[in-house]
Image 1 (cartoon, rainbow, N blue to C red):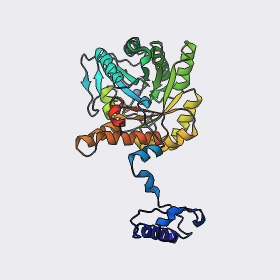
Image 2 (image 1 turned 60 degrees about the vertical axis):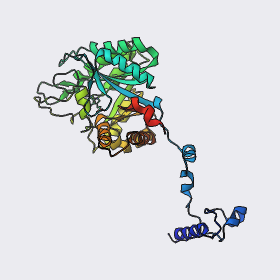
Image 3 (image 1 turned 120 degrees about the vertical axis):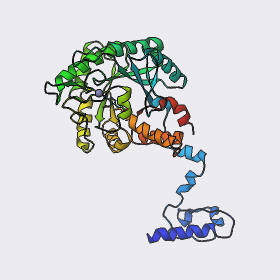
Length: 373
Ligand code: PBG
Ligand code: ZN
């Protein structure tokens, strides 16, 4: 501490030394200093070793750019898409600026606009008109996958969310047992496998199970391989927490648990925010079962786990900046309390810093504006 104070005093003396030059602390031993020391009208003591020159590399945009370690690129962003069978015109999603529930027609137009804005990667959520407890019909979402791939082919990378909550009458992510108080794991996995197969057969580049049933990753991988779909990528929502930040999404996907069943919420299948050990168990299990990409979700409240897991488990990590997080930022912007571009850029950087390879964000389509410095 004393050393630091001494060094600080030495530096101040250098700046006020009457030479008119702004001098900086030279931390090298006296013998190795050059003539620059001529401008220094005081003798640096050997105790002046503490680093007081960190601001030098922050002084202009050029040097800030040269010294940056973390970057966000447009091609690391995935844009979620919602398509609903029951609508004929796009409907805005409350809280999510620029995001709509699309009709089959408007979906294609939206993706065309996104491509023009440089967005090429998408995560599709289908909302079919009909709902069923079991033997769910996945053909609506599969048909949307087929239409997108027929129109845009390899210009887009299309992941498709695999879950039951937009397709069951009760809005849970699996098949309810007879008592209505628990999800039947095996029956749920059987449905999920059929969904993944339908989407992969329709041409999805990636299937992404978000249900949180046990064993679904291995079951889906085995089924895909058995059907000759070895090339379909599997992205697991491996570390998905039971969160209050999914509100706008549940409106867009029409997937909120309905009242009536004994099972009120998703706490019995999604992770408890206070159990980081469970996050590790899920991530290790899904990695072992063959997930190609692992995900942490939501993003900002779980950066600690994203950091630790992405270092320890050497698979690509995705992070989902979920609807409630996005809406919270938009609310700040709407109140004039934050600049949208700067705010979003800061968040995206945080995800990259914590180890995410890819970021699922509702604002990918605005990233052109956000990523410009
Ligand atoms: C449901 C699902 C959810 C999200 C993606 N798939 C939320 C939930 O568990 O209800 C959340 C995405 C978001 O909030 O943006 N399987
Ligand atoms: Zn679900």
